[in-house]
Amino acid sequence: MQVPFTKMQGAGNDFVVLDGVTRAIELTPERVRRLADRRFGVGCDQVLLVERATRADADFRYRIFNADGGEVEQCGNGARCFARFVRDKGLTSKGEIAAETLAGVIYPRIEPDGQVTVNMGVPRFEPAEVPFEAPARAAVYDLEVGGAGVKVSVLSMGNPHAVQIVPDVDTASVATQGPLIERHPRFPRRVNAGFMQVLDRAHIRLRVYERGVGETLACGTGACAAVVAGRQLGLLDDTVAVRLPGGVLHIAWAGVGQPVWMTGPAVAVFDGTIDLDRL
Image 1: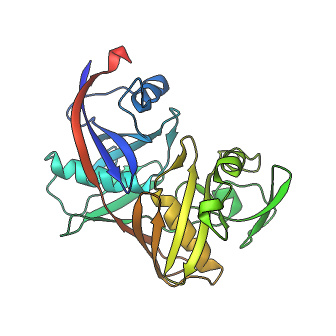
Image 2: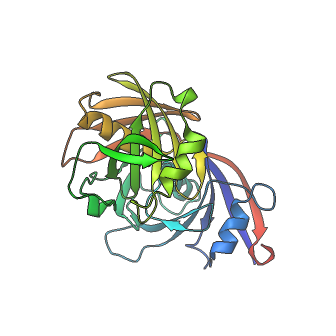
């Protein structure tokens, strides 16, 4: 089955985007893993499948598959690329698009300069909603990682995040602690592990070890989670520039009960066609 695809990236977080609106596309975990493989497939952090909406309040259904083949709830950089994809491919002429995800409906908006702003929804902090095993909600939790104690802020941006503050992201133990935190038994659905360096009240640096992917050049929901965590600890203002290895995202959050807004780039790299039956 020959299927067109578009390779896209948002701040270096890269995607294979498929049009499931004009044709039916069946993605199995094995097909996703092969598509995402950088030697045997196209290569990406996530595969995005755009389909017809299944609910009346959405324009499209937007599905996200990590490189390990698992379908996940949310992806901020992917949401921006999704919005540019449906506009660039003529699937919609809207400036603001309602996208159905496993985490609910989100509303990416294409800005005049080509960047995309996304209402990422209201962060959730109750441990059961993350999900995270803890007796009660707290601003910071102690987590045992590899025999050492780590302090993390835990929240959901539609997907689970554990954010820790580090003195320098360049020397942070992302490669060693990242996979241990991702699969820590207190996170029954695994977790995205963020390592945040606070530069000042309006600027942070961030590295993220993503669930089912490994460290990526950027993580949109991770940037949102880091800013929320920093705001909860009184370290950050309501608008913050987040510098990730792949680029800068701008995050705004007014406080508890309010949605998080993310603005950043979404770029089409190239188009191609692949035979899914040969994967």
